[in-house]
Length: 95
Image (cartoon, rainbow, N blue to C red; front, side, top):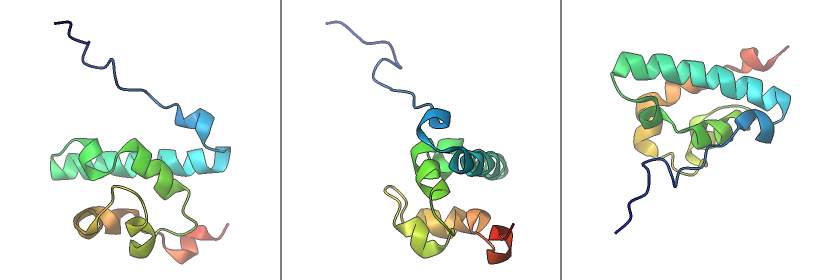
């Protein structure tokens, strides 16, 4: 029986290539928040939100509990535990 290397089936996505510039900047900012939350909670970053979930969140116009619940893989427990760290303040959206 042949075994695959641990990461053989994991495809890495280059989000800089698949997201537009503005969305990637938001994604990068969300990753920074995720890192701080993960460190504070003593959990791996992917437990808070995966990169795919963060990319979907970055595409939201305004981050709300309802918006988060529309993201595949994000359920009530994640929203309750981590959502408030990521929610948009409407005044933050004004440039």
